[in-house]
Length: 255
Ligand code: SF4
Image (cartoon, rainbow, N blue to C red; front, side, top):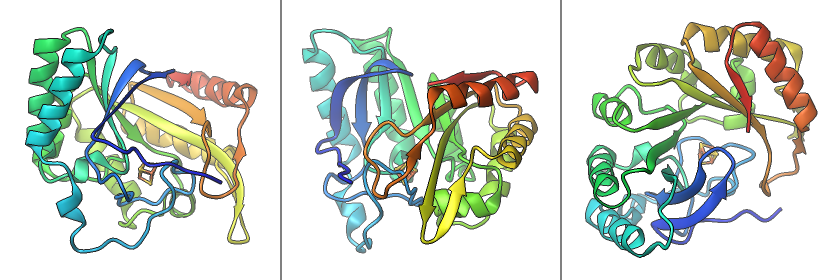
């Protein structure tokens, strides 16, 4: 199925169900996805072998500032959100913390009503400068698609196999608002059935949401093309899962 890469540093704006009118910032290369996960549903496609020079393809802080200034100055309608997303994991950019400071400054100058939002897989929260940067933004949405290590390996294929224990520890100590987003899907991948809507999966997720004291969780399913064929979970099913979570005291939304 056809996936796509963002072809610039600034993308959009696009209408997003969660963010409203959202102007995207892509801190990753434009010709290849660069991520320490390799999610089977990633709309940017599956990882290709990284070269040693890939870091050189990332935009500099100065380029990001220049492109964002231009976009904010020329947009006919200011965005509801300035959202870090793009062709991979934004927090692996070596200047991420400085870029956050610069983006907040530009937002304050040109579009004070816009939220600064970061979508992240939460893998860099062992670094104090990343935590400090994320605690400055208006909304930080952490990815957690399963609370069972085997399912995480199958869905997200993280580079670090200790992802779950690190996630729990780091989100527990995170001082900002704890918003978690969870993608639900089913599929047959390499002869193995994957279904994170199963009862045992939801129980495990509820347990981890509680352990980390999540403020809110957003549940969603596949909305765009994926690199391999996967089954979308219907709104009705998502609503049932959300209801179970709400009954367990979790503030769960469908998005
Ligand atoms: S974390 Fe995001 S960018 Fe990375 S593989 Fe998963 S969906 Fe794609």
